[in-house]
Image 1 (cartoon, rainbow, N blue to C red):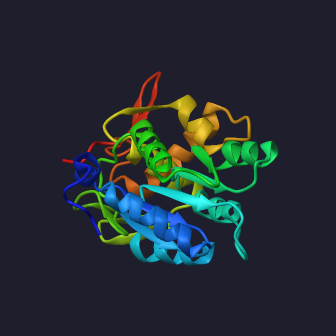
Image 2: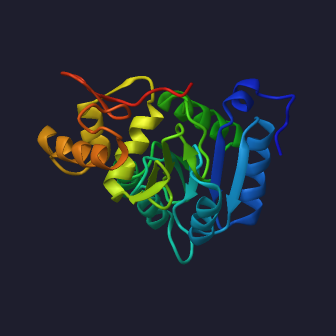
Amino acid sequence: MLDHTTDKHAIISGHRILVVDDDPALLRLVSDRLDHAGFEVFTAGSGQQALEIVEKNGLPHLAIVDIMMPGMTGFEFCKQIQQYSDLPIILLTAIDQEDTVIHGLEHFAEDYVTKPFSPRELVARVRRVLRRIGDFTYALDRLMQIDDYLTIDFVHQQAITDNKSVSLTPLETKLLYILMRNAGRTTTTDFLLRRLWPMEEVFEDVLRVHVHRLRQKIESNPSKPHYVVTKRGAGYSFPASA
């Protein structure tokens, strides 16, 4: 589906976009525009179908999600997917209601677009969100192999260490996702607290407990961590991919 004559930056970065909407005509319009802009696009006509796509292909780099869908609403899809990830989301809404927009931005979304909208504007917003979060230095595959020792399965919330599978809690998985999305850079403690507990007041000692538990599961030597490294007085970092 990629148009190799268009946006070279998007092609090189390999960003995958998941579009979720129950309107087939809108899905085609958005998919065609994103495809033309150089993104790899997956489309789903319902929240359940979107979850199945993620199950099969792994997490995308960004999702565009309609709020009002029959069955599983956009908010319900976002809640499920963000239990174990910090997936950037742009919400689509035909509801010009302030409370709905504020709820979406506070709980789930990086941005929102009100229908009807300009496809060019949507692509611009996608690019802006992706620039803001930065490039994922690891390929977002269903199974993310970090090195010969560690592989991560975000969807099933598992780590495979030295060929042994270990279960991760949703919060541990989300913590790992955030650190890996910022691989090679220090992720501040304040940022982690805001992203992991957006609607709660949680203190640094609680974060330390979860970091400790995650290290016990994924590090070959938890007392000398290689993957989740403390940056004293600042936060934590995950090594950049080679």
